[in-house]
Image 1 (cartoon, helix red, strand yellow):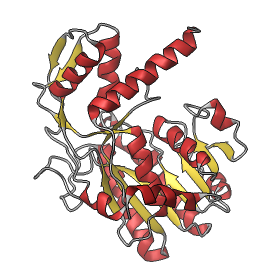
Image 2: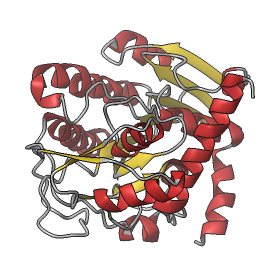
Image 3: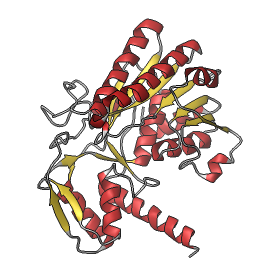
Length: 330
């Protein structure tokens, strides 16, 4: 199937009842927009609504919202009555802080995910799509690019919990025939991503650059990451919604690696300003290189990223400037 035909296949989602759990974040909010555009009936579930959901989406009659913690099984189970597809984006921890309180990470994210799986089985939902972490579940890479067959040895609680959720999804496939699809996502970035977040090197660097602050680079700048633009992420999720094959695990990335030094150069060219670099010690959970092989997703999901880092940064910057002009009344 070609990419043009996969766009036509997205129309198969029209009229489907889709629950997006973790809908108020920047990935979830973009996904909600696309699902509504495809005329899906969308249930947006989050602990912090309305979050980043657009006012136009909130006013769409096809959207229903629910403030809900996934640890509340009874309310969650009732909410998922009649749903066709569940997309699980929710997470209450971050890689860099998850080791500080792994018990909380397990109680919130693993137990909550088990509640989602139990609710899916109870409501006879045909498919659940889980957004896992290609940046943490593999640990220190033995080879690059990293394929789905690479050993999984996460070095932070965040990655361990993501991997445990994956294993339970596979268990539920065997026990209950629940059609679970796992997407191991690289480093997403793009519009609506908060510049003041402590997660995501792209928004952090861009925020500091726009405010004439030094860019803090961990290590010597040779760290390589796989940055995938938000629209490519959403298309991968939509492709997994209509996927009819037998595979269940896919890496989702850009297909290329970008070093921190290269990222600084792209941002410097974008804003046409000389940037000040401050080098900081690397962290124990930072791996030197993480680039995902996306060959299986390209072949099976008929999906392929179309936005390279240079273009993605330009689109992100343009969205920021448009938002600034709107909010300032310019």
